[in-house]
Image 1 (cartoon, rainbow over the protein chains, first blue to last red):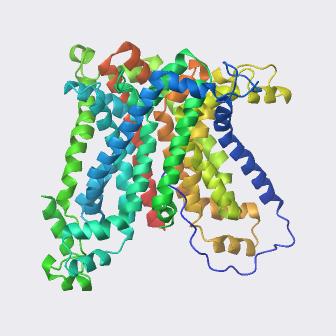
Image 2 (spheres, rainbow over the protein chains, first blue to last red; image 1 turned 90 degrees about the vertical axis):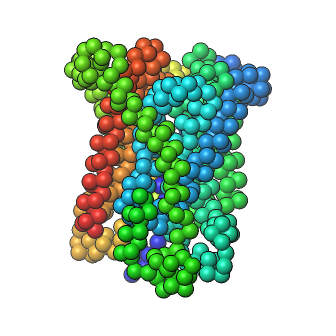
Image 3 (cartoon, rainbow over the protein chains, first blue to last red; image 1 turned 180 degrees about the horizontal axis):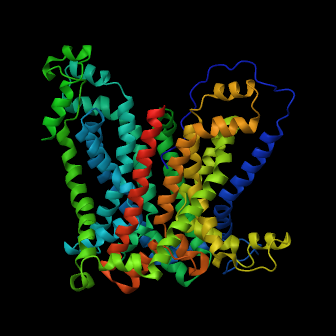
Length: 285
Length: 306
């Protein structure tokens, strides 16, 4: 997910391209046609859901008989959807803030240390990504239940924080490693305290990393069903958990409407983060 | 303890010129804003809510329920000897392997096109590849249910083309599981390959062509070997994530594809056999760790070669 393609390094100007005029490059055209098909495959199920969410039929059918907004009204009427959406947003924001508070100082400390011990710690911080969420969820539920924290919002936030730490740490490590220490050094030489150096020099420089990592953490948290369903109860069901149980009983377009709203929330989050802090600056680094 | 290790490491490094201008800091090593002790909160947190839970999970799998009476490895023996569970394990690995292979075969050409031919379209392709990651897994699965339903667009299209005899509900066919898995996982494969393919020096390919090799030979003997690093990263990522996913099998394929993750879900929801569920989770984790070890090995070897 974070392997966003870096901008290609400038290549030396190539000598005259080989045989450009003789071959209209049929192979490249065939490849291009294949890529168009591939992208249609990628977009198709998402487009289908958005389309169905406006369907006037109360069951899923093609072609769409007519268009209506009633499934969006249904979201507002069906309490569990709204409540779960709030739980989801609360958990995502709380766990991401917590993950950043824990992960960012550690990333700053680890980035400039070359000891073997620091490498071990950095690996530990990234490890939760590699543990299948269903295993982590299961293990955490039993452990937290033994602390009588089982089915609580606290437990949910703790679980999502564990899952979010790797995302925040990874991006901050990458950004901070790319920064020369000179700037902070200059700040210290000019008499700034440690806190001032952090507040006015380091933080503004690593902020794109914090926000990109935080965005990944929020997006993963919103969709982390394997982690969330273990902690499900009337007050701690996140949106995907409620959607799953709704789908098991009914198959009407309201799930499509909820999905579309959720996608819009994610897109808005992405666009806002991009506008404010410039994600492309991060991938270009 | 942390500071000790770090100070010995720092001492080995040559101090940069500027450091001597900051006598307040002792002038050793590059400026470090944050001391190592700032890793302590996150270490405590992860130790308590990550390491200990996984550790107790191992303990639970050897010392609860049946394991107390029938010996500590009874759950693992059941998983690895009972024909049903061996079948599930084989199915898990098979689903992962097929999904990985499909992602590789279908994704490589896309990555190649993005690096070599896309030009100004590249940004659009990247956007469309990343866009699905903004949607929920439920949305994508729901989408496939809609498209592959008995009267869904894809089913009708396949029927019109004569590829299937009569419209059937493909969403409850195992093929739907593979379609949905590939859809979810292929962006990771493509982006992994793109990242490496971008580093390949085009002049090597041009030299190969100048020296008389055809386009196919150049691809097979120059480009492909040079991109193996990205292929390996992508394959392992896809395989591990495919092994861990269960929602796709739960909502598609009509319950005909049962993998280890699905079994954990059922075990938790229905049977509530905590020791057995823990053992299955550990087996799944073990498979993931093997994959990561292979990756670390492979990447190190590649690194030595380069």
